Image (tube, rainbow, N blue to C red):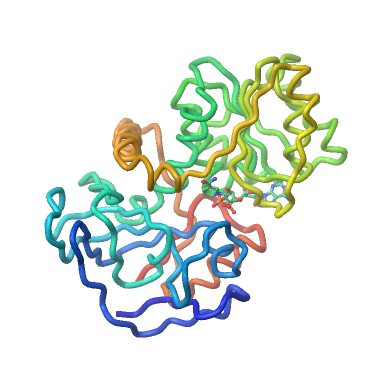
Length: 328
Ligand SMILES: NC(=O)c1ccc[n+]([C@@H]2O[C@H](COP(=O)([O-])OP(=O)(O)OC[C@H]3O[C@@H](n4cnc5c(N)ncnc54)[C@H](OP(=O)(O)O)[C@@H]3O)[C@@H](O)[C@H]2O)c1
């Protein structure tokens, strides 16, 4: 099969498509013939050696794939060859075939296409765990999502809305704000506004009143994080999901004390590995919300597998809207 192979960490354009042996399913494993591969910001960080978990080299990057089961190993009970599935992996999906434990495979609903099926994975799981498990989001609360036009952000907007929240989307341009509104945002705030430290809170107050927001789903870091902390309501919850700006923020502990604020972090892949049954349950919930029309995974760009670097360049150039997929 052909796969993108990282031999040394370095610039994201350096890995090549290589011919490597087909994977063979061991006990409890399935082989999936890829039809659509989800592209995620962390893929870029893994290739460049900047991510918190780095596989031994050489390896194939990529964390999610939708496709058809072509083989199952001994002991696999939930899947048969020919079934349509999505899988979540730590790495290895930028390839024509992917090996996955049965536990991190999810059967695709019949009416869900492969591209949307690949998009309805990591980004939605991350936002779900951030909102439900880490922030205990309740009906009627207000949620500010930063980086709201990106993969995790747009999923967060849709999910917060589905949970009955009033949603504020934090974006950097009018067209990205329109996208967020089409996916359920009630209000839009400009994260590119000058003096964000004060202007974000003013925008939030203008949108939902002087109380501020109950929850921030924070994808950006840097000055955006610091401004969001000031826009939280009494007993507000900040969930740290990512640092798309590549700037690590500091928390001033007195903010937490003064407004009874909680700050929580989310590392979704821990749940995938430690709590696979819980993650399966959440995936079933996501599929149910999709079937009700409440989730609409937005695939804005498609690239052949060989042109994976063009997709990754969109993260660097900040041209991502919703999700991108690779087609093998
Ligand atoms: N914790 C977890 O388990 C987990 C799982 C998946 C992803 N992540 C992390 O979550 C973050 C988002 O991932 P993603 O796949 O959704 O990436 P993405 O699609 O590229 O989205 C990133 C968003 O951040 C915005 N952004 C970037 N720099 C910004 C800045 N300086 N100011 C304001 N907005 C900025 C972008 O908006 P513009 O387009 O307007 O620049 C974009 O909407 C990444 O840091 C990723 O590593 C974490």
